[in-house]
Each structure stands twice: as structure tokens, then as C-alpha cells.
Image 1 (cartoon, protein in one colour):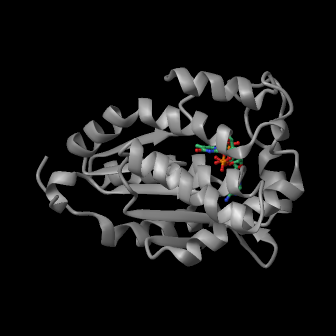
Image 2 (cartoon, protein in one colour):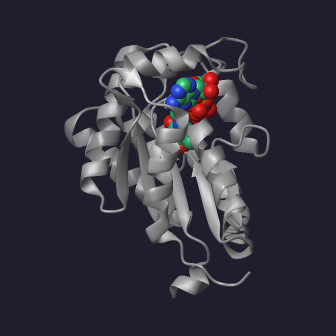
Image 3 (cartoon, rainbow, N blue to C red):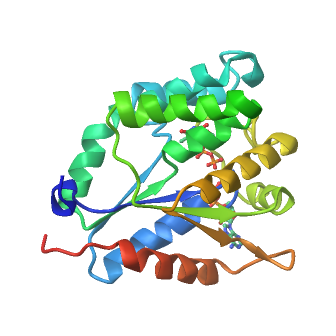
Length: 233
Ligand SMILES: Nc1ncnc2c1ncn2[C@@H]1O[C@H](COP(=O)(O)OP(=O)(O)O)[C@@H](O)[C@H]1O
Ligand SMILES: Cc1cn([C@H]2C[C@H](O)[C@@H](COP(=O)(O)OP(=O)(O)O)O2)c(=O)[nH]c1=O
């Protein structure tokens, strides 16, 4: 399929919980639109919009039991189901806009679920998630994945500043409060970034301090320029 048929580039913002994905994806979307490049922002999980999204909220709230009781492959299917239900919207957005910004996408599933297992099992889980989402569910692959890389200590500080979530009354959800798990997720993300040519890593901290939101946004803006395939809309 030609680049034009595929439509607008998919720009994915990834990172551990509290890395600034929500902040930066919203800023990128605004900046694209302000520059006259029509952009659509979608955020996964779509807790309020899909059947599976609602179940993910319940799962994260502990309603299906302790989070580590379920095999991560089974958990990954909830998130994959949420994206499958969102596939038409995603493809339509690629046609109606000049850029699509995604706050989390398939790489979140790979990093967060494969971080729960080790070695060969981790590699197999990555393969299975890609097979389900890109293969069986025909979800489009990202053109650019920007990893907001942050040490877990700093991310915990940022999480404390977050507003209340829609799916939980707690200030942090059950996974976010598990710092050793978040460390494993960070490592899984960094290893994915090394494997894949479309990934770029943006550091959230410098010398132990969280960088200003605008400085991080400027780095992201520079990385996005090469993937914009502009055409009349
Ligand atoms: N660079 C930054 N400096 C200071 N505060 C930030 C920065 N990036 C994000 N925040 C704040 O930290 C919290 C978590 O950011 P958020 O964008 O929700 O992260 P995520 O979506 O990755 O969980 C929010 O309250 C946000 O306003
Ligand atoms: C989108 C997605 C999220 N997740 C995980 C990451 C988070 O721990 C959790 C909730 O996502 P999210 O609400 O984006 O977390 P936060 O706003 O706190 O960063 O779901 C997956 O495991 N797979 C996925 O495909």
C-alpha cells in the first residue's frame, strides 16, 4: 500500500506511568494543529468508549482479583480488544487528519505485560502480542514511537501530582504503586527502543531533575518533523 493510501502517520507516545505521556501527547496535538497540520489525539485504554476499555478499568481496580494472578498474555488480550474495537476510528482518523497522535498503543502492551515474565517467555509474549494486534487484528503499525524515559523515583513524584482517574478512587492504581514492576517496565521499554528503528528515546530528567514540559515538547517536535507526510486535506 502506498504511503498516501495508509493516510496520516501514527505517532505514538510511550513511557512508564507518570512519564508525562498525557501532557506531551496533548501538547504535540495542539502544536500540530496550531501549525496548520490537522491532528487527531487518541488515548489508550479507551476506558469510557469501548467494552474492553471498561473491563480494563475494572481489572486495574482489582475487580478480577490481584493483578499478578492472571497470566500477562490473558491480560494483554483485554488491551488488544480495546484497540480492536477502536480500529475503525483509528483508520478513519488517518484519513481525515494529517497526523494521528496516540497516547499509548501496542508497545504499552508489550512493555507492561512482558515485564511480568523473564527470558524466553518474555520474547514469546512480545511475539504473541504483535501477532494478535498487528497480525490477527490488523492494527496499523506506528511510524514513530517516542519513549519518554524517566527513572522510577521521578515518575512516582509526577504520579502524585496527577488528577483522580476515572476508573479508580486511589491516587495511584495498583500497578503504579509497585516500583520494582515499574523498573522492569522501564527496562522492557528501553530494550524495545534498541530493537526497533522507528523508536526514539527522549529523557524526562537531566542530572536527576525533571526537565521543563516545554523543553521536552521541543525535543518531541523535532523528532516528529521527518515523519509528517503532508498532503492536502
Ligand atoms: N516535565 C514535567 N514537569 C513537571 N510536571 C510534569 C511534567 N510532565 C508531566 N508533569 C505532571 O506530572 C503528572 C503526570 O504526567 P502525565 O502527563 O499525566 O503522565 P502519564 O500520562 O505518562 O501518566 C501530571 O500532573 C503532569 O501535569
Ligand atoms: C494501553 C495499554 C496500557 N497498559 C497498562 C499501562 C498502565 O499500567 C495501565 C493503565 O494505563 P494508563 O491509564 O495509560 O496509565 P497512566 O495514565 O497511569 O499512565 O495499563 C497495558 O498493559 N497495555 C496496553 O496496551
